[in-house]
Amino acid sequence: MIKILALILTIGGMIALVLGVLGIFGNNFTQLDPWALTILGGVFFIAGVSMLKYRKDEPVS
Image (cartoon, rainbow, N blue to C red; front, side):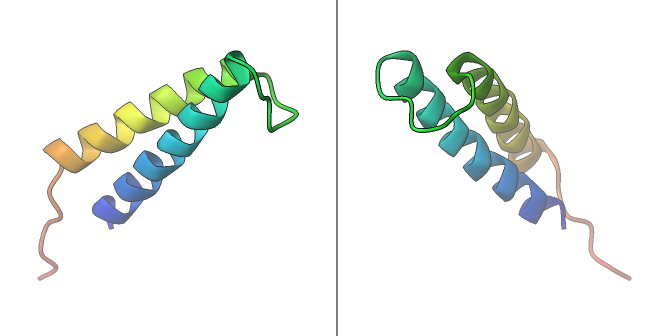
């Protein structure tokens, strides 16, 4: 279950980072502030990667 959440956070963070950086440097594809989108994308991406790296799914007994 933790790996699924970590994968969702990582993919969502990547999408938010890309949209945020594109918004900062030119084309804003959303109505959201690009700086907020970039910061949230970075936080979600780092959280997802660290969960994938350090957390292990425990077997159900």
